Amino acid sequence: MDIVATLMLTSALIGAFASMRFNAFVLVPFAILIALASAAILHRNDFGPWSGIATIIACLVVNQAGYIIVRIFNPAAHLLSNDVADSEPSPRRQQAVHDDDNDGD
Image (cartoon, rainbow, N blue to C red; front, top):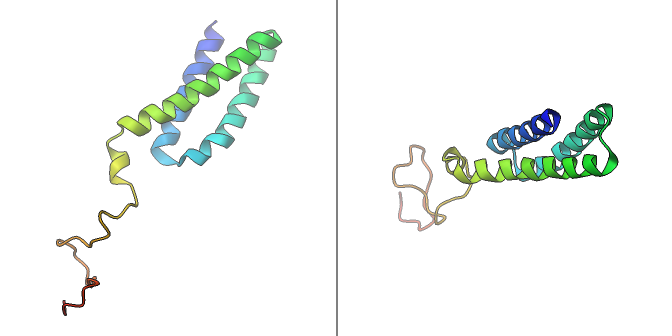
């Protein structure tokens, strides 16, 4: 059982760290790597096929849950967004960016 707990904890940490650095698209290659590594580890420790499949599915779910939880509760995620607020330049801008209203600024 220590192996299952270790695999699930590792999967959750991979998902959490991935959410701080990458988009959600990176979960696909990580899911493949987690599934292959988990299958190899579980096979080496004489897990049966059904318990191995259940453990791999649990690892993938925990990986995605870790990604989503950190993405939701990470305050820095809101600072890194590329969205423009109301398509208006900030009045405190420091570069010479001109407005679209052609008022000579």
